[in-house]
Image 1 (cartoon, rainbow, N blue to C red):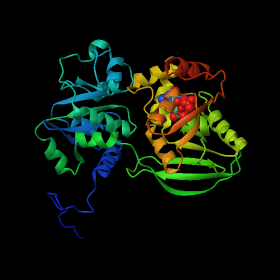
Image 2: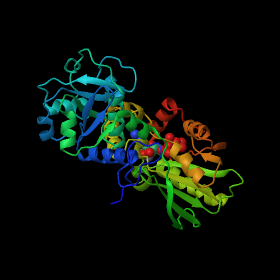
Image 3: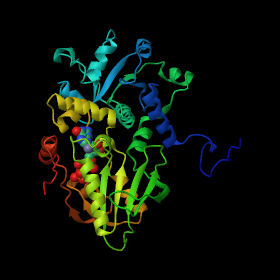
Image 4: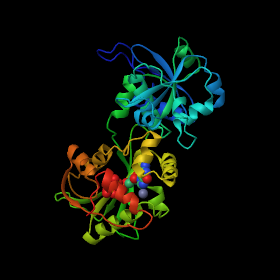
Length: 374
Ligand SMILES: Nc1nc2c(ncn2[C@@H]2O[C@H](COP(=O)(O)OP(=O)(O)OP(=O)(O)O)[C@@H](O)[C@H]2O)c(=O)[nH]1
Ligand SMILES: [Zn+2]
């Protein structure tokens, strides 16, 4: 295997077969989903990160070094832990803590610990390492909570076992960077709603979710294009769930494009407003207990909307579209596209699918998330 010579100015030879930062972060995300720990480094510490959701009893029992639980500030608030500033909070884990107890701090479907059971001891301030841990666990679409194990043997354990090791700052930079999905393939797909359809598949270089663009007709790029930015909703789009308006919006948008002769529907794989289907079902279970859609996300430890609309803007740029008539009721989508240099010249309202099962959901979005009602 050939190792390329020193690049000008570089300190070490660059081996083209060595995984780059983006690849190493993508591996870490996959490892965490499997339940494998990863090691993060900052200038002052090293720690093993183990997501609570995929932590096995064997690995938990084997932890013999100081450890803390990192959760989002949203989850800390739900646990009535003292108020927190910033993104994440650290909760102490007593040496004799049981795995069930740790899980109940992370997972609201388990009986909530009595508030006096949530440790309130003075805590170390969270650092970039803890923020990186939570971002990784969110990228893995797991419950946003992880054990962070410190101590002198952490690096040795990581190296001995071939675990992923990266600097917290590098992980944060990678996870916060915009995605760059590239076109992979496209073909004609005649649809019930629009016969003259073409599906384009885009793939990001970080190995993350693929996204799709459904092109109806041949939109004239010299004029504003009728565009829908649709986020995946397996329950609404595929099952025809009546709990939301997604399926109706999907079909109405395609029908409108067919009626006008052209348009583009971006289908972004950001299920559950970016928390993943498993977490969305956790949120639905909480909604069955009386919480609204925003409160349920918060109780789980998520923001109400975890989507990154820069991906939508990137897809539009890839398709040569710079000016759009956007089919949406969500002003945040307009603001985010505008911020990314996609000019929204008109908002086209998309009010369809309201019924007895989703009235309170739609009302909550209008009241709390600023969705427009007309
Ligand atoms: N977390 C969570 N996600 C939900 C819930 N109901 C629907 N969703 C998700 O919400 C997203 C809805 O996306 P969109 O319809 O594109 O977005 P929107 O913000 O409602 O804006 P417009 O439809 O454009 O007005 C999809 O990803 C759904 O899976 C819920 O109760 N909780
Ligand atoms: Zn939906």
